[in-house]
Length: 179
Image 1 (cartoon, rainbow, N blue to C red):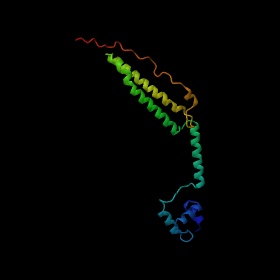
Image 2: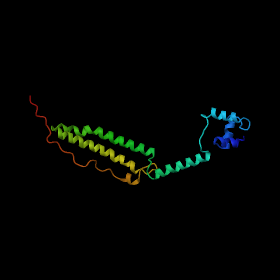
Image 3: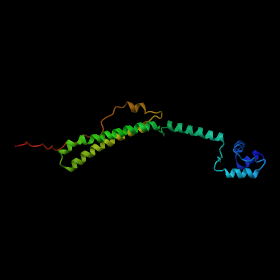
Image 4: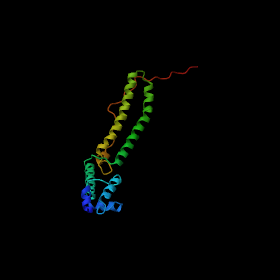
């Protein structure tokens, strides 16, 4: 049996059989049963796919083209853009949360009605959520070339939140100290 006949028998090409012979497979022309035993014994070490090198290259090329097309259609976002936006969102979120206590401390101290306190806290947390959501919306406008679209970066940030905060009904004042 020739190398070519053995290759067609096991569904491989002639070059693969030559490579396996270099790795120690007995020649099918001399010992066909020994060659089959060698292939069975080394099955875990050998690559058994239906694709030869040319088919694998064409598949890799098609995959690369598909990725490029997905990026062009904005179906993929480069990791560097996601890292930048995630860092900005984290900074916005942390900064707004850190400032929450300072913004509300004096105002809430003068409010005695729990409903007004709850409404004021809800308003501030909504502002924080909106600021984070506005920054996350940039993920939809990433250009795919490692940066955001120019129209997105030219915008000036506007006021966050829709309404004006309610003022406290009446602040408590400390009375005069007497001796």
